[in-house]
Amino acid sequence: MALTRPPRAGTPRSTPRRYGDSNLSAMKALSKRMVNTHFREGWQYRVEIEEAPADWELYCKGVSFTPIELESAEQRVGAHYLNYLNGIRPVAVSMTMRDNQDGRIVDWFEAWTAKIVSPAGTWSLPADYLRTLRLFRLDYNGGATLYKELRVQPQMCGELTESVEPGGGLLEFPLTVQEFRGFGKHY
Image (cartoon, rainbow, N blue to C red; front, side):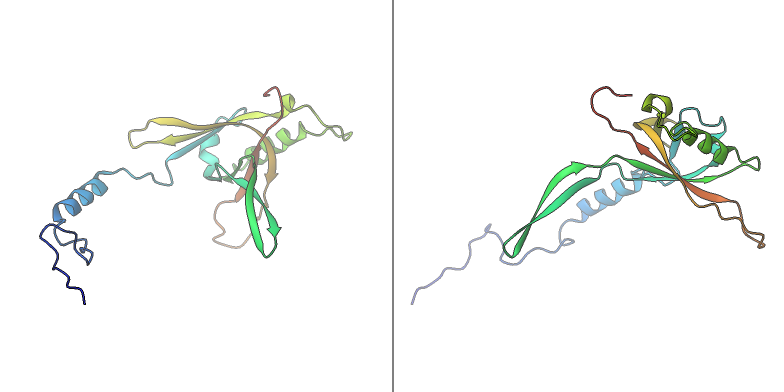
C-alpha cells in the first residue's frame, strides 16, 4: 500500500475555480468594455447602384446578402461520408424596396433587365448591362466606409402585392442582383 502526500501549497487545485471567486476586477473591466463598445445596428448601411434613380436611398428599406458562401460536396466511403470544399458562390444581394407612386424603382429595374435580352431573343454582352453596386457601413458620426464593391446583374424583382384592404401600408417588394463572375477580363 503506497502512501500519498497531501498537495503542497502553490500546486493547482483539483477543483476548478468559479468565475466570480477572485475575478471581480476582471468582470468590471469586461462590463465597462461592453458598455463602451459601439455595436453595429441594422440601420447602419447604405447601398448605391450605378445608374439608379437619384433618390434611391429613400426607397431601399433593407438589404440582406451572404458575403461568403462556400460549396461543398459529399463523397461516400464505405459507411462514412467525407465532405470537402469545391467552390465559392457569387454574392447575391437582396433589397427590400418601396416605390414611388410613379413606379420609378420597378420601371428602372425593368429597363435594366431589358438590356440583357433583346425582343428578338438575343443576349447582350455583360459590358452592356453590368453595373457597380457599393455597400457601405455607416458609423454614428455620419461617416461611411466602403465594405463591398461588386459588378452585378439583375436577377429578380420579387412579387408585387397590391391590395385595397385598409391598413395595407406601403408597397414593399424584393429586388435581387447577383455578382457577375467571368474568366479573364473583368467587365
